[in-house]
Image 1 (cartoon, rainbow, N blue to C red):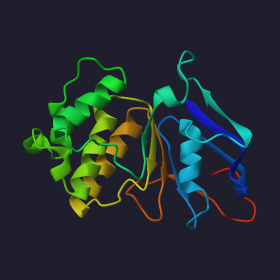
Image 2: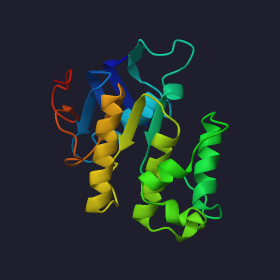
Image 3: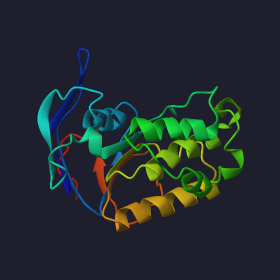
Amino acid sequence: MRLIGIDLACQRGERGVFAGVNFAVEAGQALIISGRNGAGKSSLLRMIIGLLPIAGGRLALESGDSELSIAEQAHYLGHQDALKGSLSVVENLSFWAGFFGLRSADLHTPLATVGLAGLAGLPAAYLSAGQRRRLSIARLIAVPRPIWLLDEPTSTLDASAQHRLAELMAAHLTQGGLILAASHGPIGLTGAQELRLGEASPGEAS
């Protein structure tokens, strides 16, 4: 599997966010998207997942499932943790498992993996910001998808949770997945490519 961006451009209203962005990420590889605030890190991930229109250029996925779109083969972890406060921890995860097409899933294992097994019956409204983030991360492992699009994934996580996320990302890559992560700083991925937005001549990641 290979995810390719060719001469991509992003437009928000009357403002051009970026143009001429190129990258190629293969199975087992990670790409860190960096740059100043407003450079378009989040916008690039949202374009890939289909939440923003592509103003120019194109995206291509080689050797993926030809019957599915890129979005249908990807997980997107955005700034906001998409949880319903009145539902319990396990009910939130069950909703997302069903939304992603998994009718029968082992939800205990992903909750235990992110350290939330003991809070499965607690309404999500009572979770701390870090616990909410961990519940969102549980979606990534409850329903396997090859592409992970992560926007500031370590936000609100303590050191222990950041270390566990790094382990999960490394395991995902080892299993042939690929990761694109927008971040202002290190997220624990060694050997990742970097694509820096907001420079004079953005080019293909190296």
